[in-house]
View (cartoon, rainbow, N blue to C red):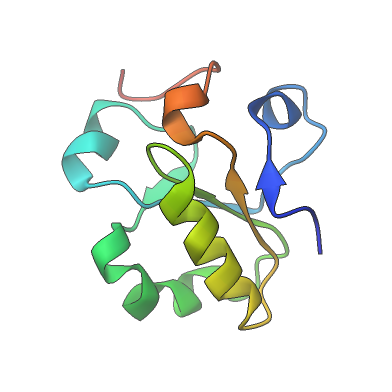
Amino acid sequence: MSDLGVEGWQLRCGEWTPDCILDLRTSDQYSRAHLSGSTNVPYNVFQAQSEAMVAGNANVLLVDEGGARAAEMAVWLRSRGHAASYLVGGMSAWRGPLEGA
């Protein structure tokens, strides 16, 4: 499996490309701005909905506001056999393009 934490520059330069991006923030936060190609799955329903969403994806990237909840859920997914990583620093640290902004 890849490293648990993925830095923003690794995404921006194409060094690491996820097959699936899941944004754990609230729907209001997601609607204001999000990573291109991401899907909103709020943290409070993530465990109930995530297994089906990540099935068949080789690399899953989890995103939240600051990185802590995404890191927690990446570890949870890895414990279930999925290749999951999180965006270090979350959306607060992201300096790349956004949709919905």
